[in-house]
Length: 458
Image 1 (cartoon, rainbow, N blue to C red):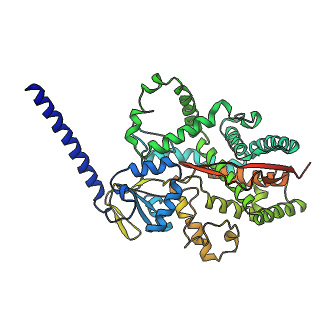
Image 2: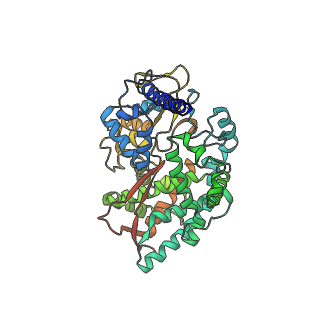
Image 3: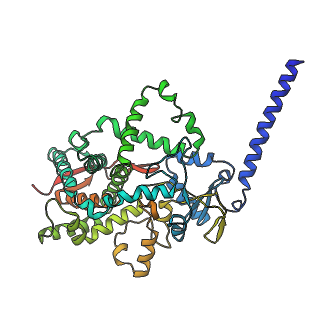
């Protein structure tokens, strides 16, 4: 009898679990205020669709396709809404709107400038360092960038002199890491000098990004994985992760962050790749640099002010490259405040997670005609009304109080290193018949920018 009773108890428990799961799925599907918003059918029932989409590494392309099919609001999870309308930027990311940044996973409060949900804490932490990130303060350290540029050019010259192909994308990553080392710790990290991933730091960070992007879709899994204090005991190699984490936290709480290194490298790769794929734009930019050089307007190395004042087409190229290939490939999630909010003429209830994906916004043909084409001239020749719409719809650095704090550092690097390299080298794709590969691990990273270099200056 006891055996039968135990079997019956187990059966009832199983039925209860199944009933709870079914009830939860039904509640998800018909969540108040969200049931009528279009999107993938399974995404309305469970977050597994979102997890699988992110796991594939091409969620940015999936998001573009979904918004083209369904319009400005797409339901990508039981309580997750992707928004694809530039008019929603000030609503979701504007100051004092009541939207809070979403937690990636719950273990303990993530109290740093980048990850905190507390807006008061964010303001208090940002206020004392904001001046250090101002353009005026950063330009006082411009010589730190110049020292990295000198090593970078010399290393690339070795490839040009020996006529060997170079993985320019990887070297741009080394450059970005060494520059942040100068800004943050007043010393280079050794990537350019060594010509390799020092201490496996880039590889380890890559692993962290993969983990964060995937685990962020199912935060409950984190306490069972890296959030489990026993995890390092079973995997001694986790010491590497701890070293990277400590380095990351030091950088975040100092003058820069590793996130900015990666986003800068992504933007630099995008610029060179798109120029190499569009020879007319490359020729136009080279002519602009050569003319300014011949007129004595550019020093060596090129300064940020010189680049800004004398290379207007370069500025258009940078903006267009970041439009076509923004660094972040997932929505920047925010939680709707109590009482809800109206977005795109639809009431969204409080507690819903909403966000904008720059890849979606930057492919909006209403704002950017011929959105899939690389047209730097659009930022110069468009009429004032369209140009204003494009500026309002440009989301490469985020928006509001959470605009990328390292934006000015990235702009300084890009305005200096791109014209310097084009002045020094003729750059060609080693295998122009091959497309590069991209993978979305929160940042949309690229592989395959293999180039041949020819010296232009001795």
